[in-house]
Length: 171
Image 1: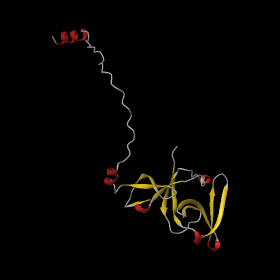
Image 2 (image 1 turned 180 degrees about the horizontal axis):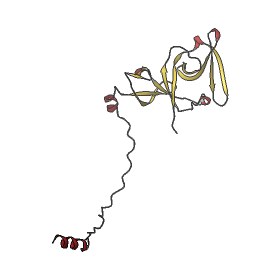
Image 3 (image 1 turned 120 degrees about the vertical axis):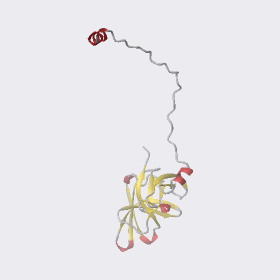
Image 4 (image 1 turned 90 degrees about the vertical axis):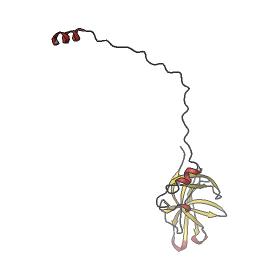
């Protein structure tokens, strides 16, 4: 009997149930979510991990802020409260890849560093210059807009604010 049942099962056609694909109601297209800016509540909640760093213009006014990671209370090895961005005021440093509107991360500095881009303050305005230290307490300040320029000034006349660490720009 087992052999006849086996032959009958083999001979019987396999039945396949066909179903129509489900029709879903037409849905309205979803707009892609815009990237959300962190709110003050989030920045405060993540105070030990992230910090809002101010972006300042040439006059020293806060115009924006950027969120940077904090490690042991420091940004780039410096106390987080002393770090800021400078919105480049003009194209005077274009030859050094710093254009108007670029954000330059400034770390505080107290001594002149040879061959570095430093931030100085004069008459209430900030300006960036590349520095070459010379003998006799003099400093060669360089800038490069459409052609290279330089000026030799006594180091005592300069008000050093900080050192440029990084440049950020929009594409």
